[in-house]
Length: 176
Image 1: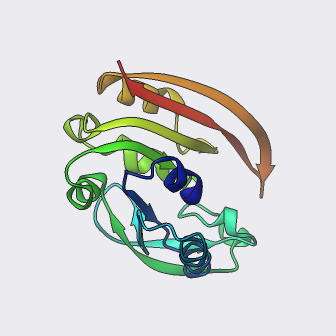
Image 2: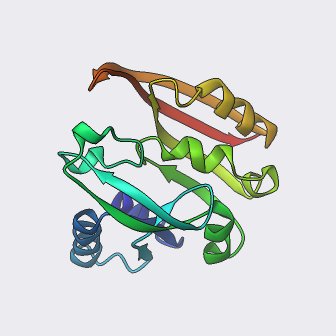
Image 3: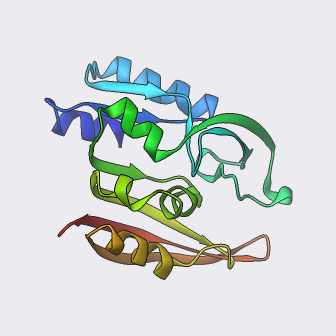
């Protein structure tokens, strides 16, 4: 997705955050091979607060999550995390488009971000992950609406993972 954004926003700056070392290496290689000079890569997580978080590693690169059940893990890593407030300091105070796919962390990150910070993010595109009863999509939608955003969602899939119901879907939010 980073290369897609970089090629379409040639005059813009792309900030990509990838905490998992193997995924980070692949991203860095793709940016180099494709000569994407408008991409800055950070080996960090996005979370509700800045600090350290534990990311549990799943069996495939798309399953790494802070919320993965123990029996689904093949290991874990500690990652430096940034709040969206800290990300805004890196980006110069605003974000045109925030794209997230972080296996449940989108709820923690956005739900705990002050409305004043959310208002500095003009558009949001994310894949959401409802894991058991940990998160409620309607709470996230209300939070984004409180920051003067129009929100549209589309459910993609439902399944059981290690006895826990999971629902995934897409969410788009933009300023009114």
